[in-house]
Length: 364
Image (tube, rainbow, N blue to C red; front, side, top):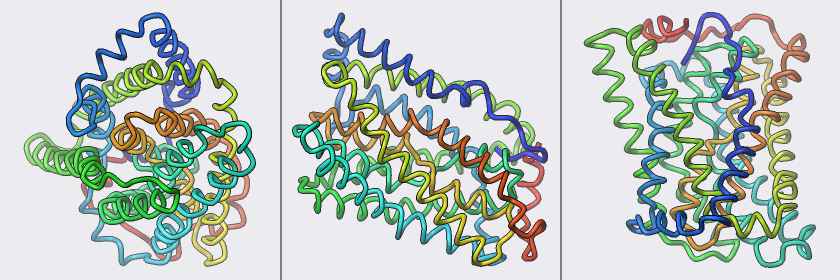
């Protein structure tokens, strides 16, 4: 959702780390005190996909897809340099630096601390590293007064690239890590958690705009569904933590240990992308959002795929959830860094990128 004036990050997003920690406490308590609940929820599976969690994740992803105007892709050619930098960072560099850092920490540095679950945490990091951020980029971009039209193009193109590259990148890295690849489940996960909400979002967006207009879509449909997104995220986390209660209870220090390589990866990718944009003399309004797209993650997708691919390996999903835990505080630090260093960039875009009229109306 784009706006003319940068909006403050919402109360829910600001304290996302707190909500995740509270969900962890509630989930672990349920798992330890009422183990029959997660055992009952585990029964609702089709092809290793938990139906209850799938529905909750759809509640998170579908509203995100509604916010994205894929017609903005027509503007790709108006400033390809910034997009190329984003694509290279997201799809050629980021997945492999994540794999390298996770392997170093989980299999070498932490070898004696987590001998049984280190490989599971590696798999979770792989799923995060191959999924660049979507809707939250609009928030980070608005906090730095980033170019909203260009941010939209960056997000829209990355969402489409996910359809092509997520499966092969994940399969390659999991194979190198010694995991057996359940191809059918992997493709099913992408179909369920990317293709279906993407198509439904595009159809819904087009239909509502034609009948009611863009303002109605933003103020009535997306605004209401955004509340469902919050509920879906919190319920999903509680359920997952209840299923991982024993792992967390027996290894509480693992949460902090997992966070270390994930945070390093976030700073690394941001500065690589942000620095590349500066080298190529791109304006700040393009450079900052470009750094945010790669630095943050599409954690909803990573969590969903982790649960589907590795239902018997709770450490995989736990690693992706730690990504949720660190997301907001780390990204807010990067927002501050970007705002303090913006004066080294051109103040105005020398290669303007305009969005379709429908997108400009969406900037409220």
